[in-house]
Amino acid sequence: MQSAKRVSESRTEQVQILSQATLNGYRRLFGGQLMEWIDIVAAVTARRHAGCNVTTAAIDSLTFRRPAYANDTLVLVGEITYVGTTSMEVSVKTYIEALDGSRLLINEAYLIMVALDENENPTAVPPLILETEDEKRRYNEAKARARARRK
Image 1 (cartoon, rainbow, N blue to C red):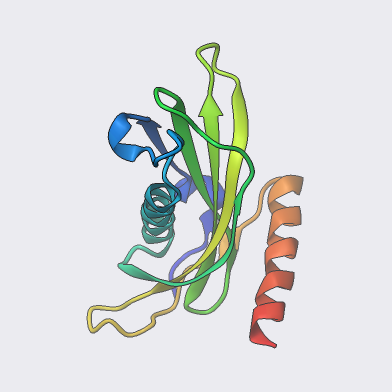
Image 2 (image 1 turned 90 degrees about the vertical axis):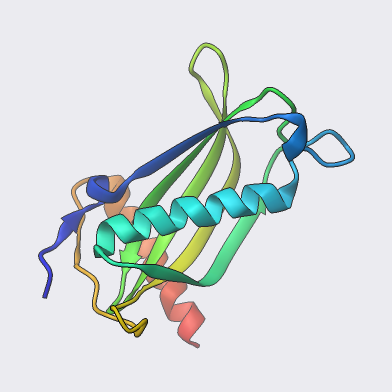
């Protein structure tokens, strides 16, 4: 069994400045483009935690709260919120970052990633070390979502 890892050890940030190529006909960020970035951030986060390749098993939730426009700076932040035997729930939050550094949440997603061994079979993942009250709260919420998915 691999040794437990902290949430902070796999935390991932990706930054994008929106250009015309990422916009839809309404001059807003194309939702499919954001979904691709979210999947990449979730995969990197899960790989960092598991120490092996992963695959996306499910998108549990994807909520678009606000649009983003050309020249906006987007920051995507991925964190492990829950681990099972071979799977991990990854939270990816997307923010618009203003020039003063303040951030506005525009999207929140939860993805289920499965760790894969060298033969692409599910493999065990390390336990998660919860250090803050927020991490413990998010873990309990994720555990409830995991139970609901199994039903």
